[in-house]
Length: 478
Ligand SMILES: Nc1ncnc2c1ncn2[C@@H]1O[C@H](COP(=O)(O)OP(=O)(O)OP(=O)(O)O)[C@@H](O)[C@H]1O
Image 1 (tube, rainbow, N blue to C red):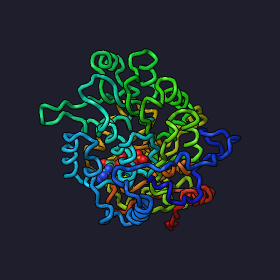
Image 2: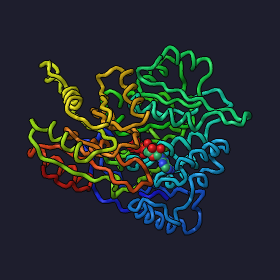
Image 3: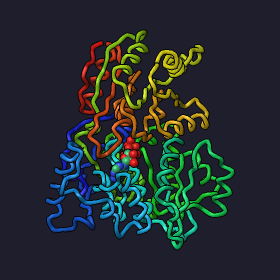
Image 4: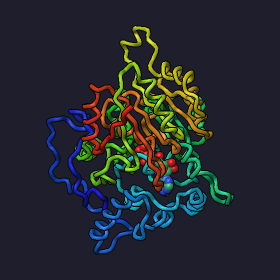
């Protein structure tokens, strides 16, 4: 039933030369049908399901382009979840309907029926496509609020993404107004948090859901303060990022194999980019990160980036980049924008230079006279300042966020209309995630703009990203 079985996916690569999932000597798995055995959906179990599904896939593609649910896809989120997600949560979801969560996004419509059957899944869908709600609805369908044990764990790469996921989980899982129904507790076990307080909490009354960064989670597991015996579902969000991270890949693998067994839990991986996904699926089974019948649900395989994004570039010299950015801010008048800046090299740090982020912030504070609030987010800031920047943004009002790639993964600021790559990202995958911080209103027709400030020598790098990600970039003349 999943779209990957039916769409012929053109070959494209978001890859570095060697995949961390797959040693180069391992040949491409031949029996792909093994991984992709047909999923029986409770909603589409007619004998014609393959044809129905093929139609659904066709509709999915055209719907993505028009952004409007058609009659054939007018199934609501409530329809899909009924019988699986408890009624009081669906009632809460009715509250969400008031803010626009009526129809499922493509990934929600494709994945939820499969997830509710208990199958392990790899959710592979564009940025801003609603993967978070997809896995949270699965979690809420499985946990029993009466039981005092950790029943679901969501692993995320950064504290910022963890706070965001926790907020949505708490909103969905909160105690119902009906006093009979107990709410589920959600713990944010994140780097920079108060581990001592969390230890007492875990011992006294374990929360039902834990949203965790890898290091904090492994710390609790190694100290035997947290156990995964009663975990029914383990989600790894931004899975490719975690597997590529030199620091986090080892602990994530350990988490998936040593601290718990894939046979005893449902495993869900999510990302907008799964490089060499066929190899990854193969490795999932071989390494026992998932069960053997894992399903790879790949939505919008032929358009890896949202179609509402328009891509542009300006060729300029390194010395006048600040002025060009200022001119762009004046001409484009974004409602809110993220300006991505490359990380400072070790060499530049040793030489005592100021980081580009600081220089840019100082420039904007003295030269930009628009109404947007200028904020900074980067790894080197302490956790409190990082949290303060995001809290300020979420309080409303337009913003100009100057950030390194720390804001590139998962961060959901739906008011962002413009992305500026002040420095080009290092890989096509990074480009996809940076660009995907805009265009995050699933059913909106609104176009958002991604503008790249490049030197003439960098034109070929951008061209490579265009080829890999299948988009085209329009040149702006200044
Ligand atoms: N069914 C829905 N209807 C309307 N909006 C939705 C729906 N589901 C999710 N959203 C909204 O879409 C936005 C993007 O969702 P989410 O953060 O889950 O994206 P994602 O797929 O995880 O993206 P990324 O890969 O960038 O992390 C959020 O603001 C969320 O509230």
